[in-house]
Length: 184
Image (tube, rainbow, N blue to C red):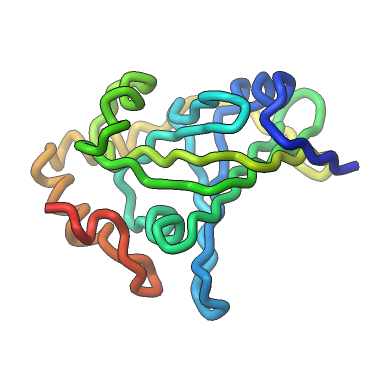
C-alpha cells in the first residue's frame, strides 16, 4: 500500500497541485511538548523542485510550526484526495521560516497572490515522500475559500497585524521562541 520515494515525482507534484488543502505537522524535541497539526489553504503551496517546497503562511493565533522548525527543522506535510481516486501524499523534510527582509523573501513572495496578513514563508527541503491508499478518506466537495482571515487582516491593517504577531506569534505553546521573538 504505502510507497516511498526519494523526491517529489512528477505524479506526486501533479496530485499536490490539484489539492485545495494541506496539513502541516511539526513537534518539539521534548517528549512533553505539544505536537502541532495545522490545516492550510488559500492557494499558498508551491513545489519549487523535486526536493524543495514553500508555502505562504498568513498570520494565525499561534506560530507553532515556526517555533518547532526553528528548534529542530522537522516538518511533515500531508495532502489527501477528497475527490477522484483515493490517495494520500506525505512530504518529509527540514523546514525553515523565511521572514520579510530575509535574502530569499523577494524571490519567493512573487510566487503567491497578494494577501493581507502575510506572516512568513515556510520552506522545506524534502528528503522523502510517501504515497498511501487513502481508502478511508471521505469524498468531500470543495465549495471555496473562507474570507474570514483576509477580512480580519484587512480590518487590523498592517500595523495592527504586526502588533498582533508580536503579542501572539513570538513563542509556541511550550515557550519555544519563533523567528518573531527577535523581529523588531
